Image (cartoon, rainbow over all chains, first blue to last red; front, side):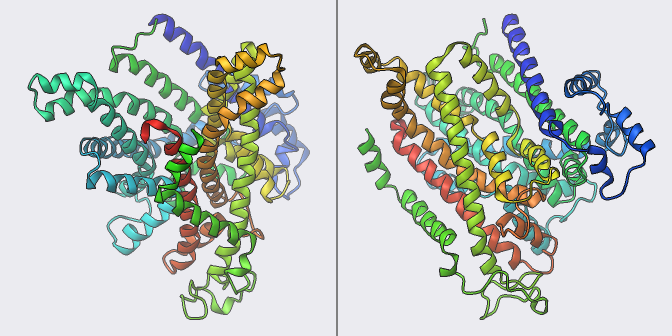
Length: 306
Length: 281
């Protein structure tokens, strides 16, 4: 187990450096004049130019700047936006919204997704099964942009069940979270259904039934526990698309979270902020996936990391 | 095997439905004039936000353009971006997958780590950064930056699929036999190994095509994909959303076309996978 963790951590370090390098190179590799980009059409005075060049180390080579950037990142120093606000303070206000939004979405995915998946799997071939399969296919196919507006229009504007934009409270986050979770939800339902169907046919499930255990206990304890293993992995991977979806949903519902900040930074051509936010999101993604890999061993005693 | 898959496929209504939708979409992209009589560039502000009527069934948008005509003419760029980006992603995936699967060794390790890295970056986030660069460079807002970005970022899953089918095929007896008969690497790879990877790769790429079209719309929606004067579904959705409270029709039609097209590609991929996967038959 220790050896596995060490190897996995080393792998993560490589992926971390690779990813930050790729993102950094994409952003700054072939950049013409970032200072002029900041100023737009206006002329930049020599003093301003000298200050910004010094501040962002623009007189040094690419590798020096990358090393400086990663060093700062590792020390917890996120750097400044192009308008010289510390990025950490920009993010401090944005994190809670995204965290709440993503957390709510995850709850929706786990509770509804696993619940519906188990039901569909147990009554395989039934009406509920067919209906969920058709419904999930539609949801998977409909892009977040469309889904977001459709939900906003129908539930927010037409039926007035939910506020159409962020009002700061948890209630106004429910509709965005529902829509954000929808995509992962569909996949979660399908995955749970497939594994439940497979596990119901397994020998241990038959044994449990033969021992005289009730069907609820067999499904709820024996089958469910084994069926959750692939679902957990999926949720880790799915976090990536959840974060990308958050960028869209936060813009549709005007939620001042990380995705909203990212989209604004893109629009204002604020390179440092874009790179830092994307890097942070990637780090979150990597850490969660590491945690998922380790959780594997806890969930499935058959898996032994030697 | 292949004819068996075809027979299974032929019996699925889902397959025929998605094929029918895609045929319509392709014809619409090639000859939009067949579907829309109105000119999408014929806009007059005095009919701004005019609701659906006999003259224009889908109504007019804020600029006074015919919503239906714009939606039909937007098919071309959406489909073109999807197809070209998928072709690029498929090429990269085939190269990377076959090289790492067939040659193995250190090259495999390097390429697999590279795949991990690209797979580790969520597609949309990386696309935002890359396209942001392309637009800041002033390389314009044509389809090429979007195609390049999606292609460069979206090949990973297909590459993994190709690699694993190549790995499985490499050890087969018939490949050993071909080698003993004196076939060179190129011939073995092209004639004996690559055909095994085609079916699984096609499945993945069909679904990828759907997601690429959705991604293009999302990027255009965020303001870094296609921009005017190109007509695209994502751009029209973005333009319509600000005035959603006044008029729903400029938003609904591009959204519906987008959703149906993406759905058709995903259903098609699903149906082909089911046909090729004997476990689900």
